[in-house]
Amino acid sequence: MKRFLLLLPLILICGLFVNWQLTPPSHDRDWRADYSRLPGVEQTGNTFRIENIRDWNYAEDGSVTRQDWITREIDPDGLSQAYFLVEPFGSIDAIAHTMLVFAFEDGSAYVASIEARREVGEAYSAPKAAVLPIFEYIFVWTTERDMYGNSEFMAGDDLFLYALDIPLAQQQAVLRAVIAETAEIQQEPRWYNTLFSNCTNVLARTVNKIAPDAVPFDKAWYLTGYADEFLYAEGFIAQGESFEAVRDAALISPLIRDLYDIADPVDFSRAFRARRAGG
Image (cartoon, rainbow, N blue to C red; front, side, top):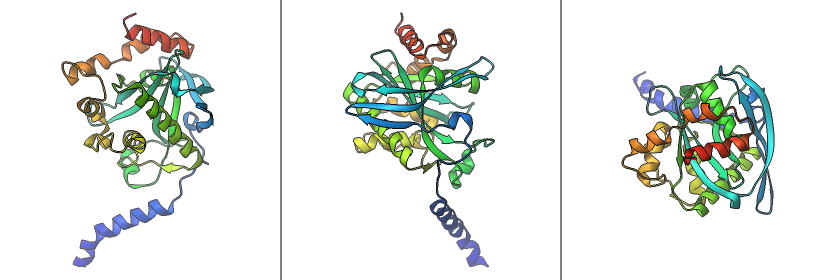
């Protein structure tokens, strides 16, 4: 009996591992409306056609008043700036959702977000997703206006936006890598895992595919609320007097409310960039 008790943790770990291996992920489920469409990618030369970019509209009470899905042609050579976007959850510093924002010379801007894809009536559970194969993950693509409105009005979370302080060619390479990863997920569903395949470490591994070890391993891969501080320490976002000062300047939530009446997503992004630049 004593030997069995000693072996019980190993038996449980082996059982969980087997469960992950034998349970296949799928794109064919009764998905919640905001996860109902899988982004698709088609490449023509240097241009990528991305389908099912979410462009929803949200009322101040968090209700959805319009559910549009759009298709756009994206040329990485037209990228003007990439950003790291952080959405903290509650009062626990270690927990946050992280995303990438890509702004283009024509004024448009899109958000790429790794998310646990949920079915109708299914609630997110970080502890369960750490041990059980219950969520697939996808790259959710949205207009900038959609994601900012979703976070501000539906979730009620603050947003912090940091410009990546790396050469533009590297930013363009990151965009291409994210698009390639989106295309791979389109062909092959994958399991989400709170610890090993989450919103932050999937992005880190995506970047490291094109530049090995470019994003060093850090606790922020798992404690995602520290991701912005980690990138600041590594020099990936612009430096300031202190990280705290840079973080304060990165808060964009008040600006979202000021500009959200601009219904066109490109006009919204143009106005947003102009206000951030002091215009």
